[in-house]
Amino acid sequence: MLWKILVAVLIGALAGFVAGKIMKSKTSLLGNIIIGILGGALGGWLGSFIGIGGGWVMSIIIAIAGSCLLIWLFRLVFKK
Image: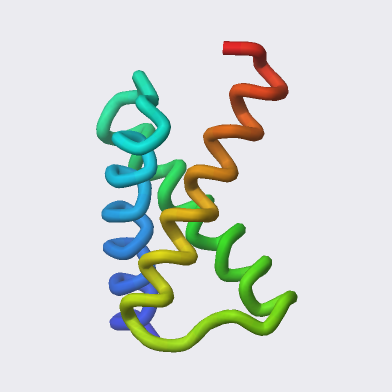
């Protein structure tokens, strides 16, 4: 159980870093990691909702997409 949580956090951190670069976010590294973890959860939820998922590569892609979506929504709401 602890191993799965650690892997999810690492995938989220990687996804947040990559999404920050894709979206040209000016958030700090810690902020990108938090966005990545939350975006990974959002992407995982949306992926399971529409039936997409499975495998390491797909998990990372879904987490990056969820993180980008989260950054976009954050910008939309707070008009940054």
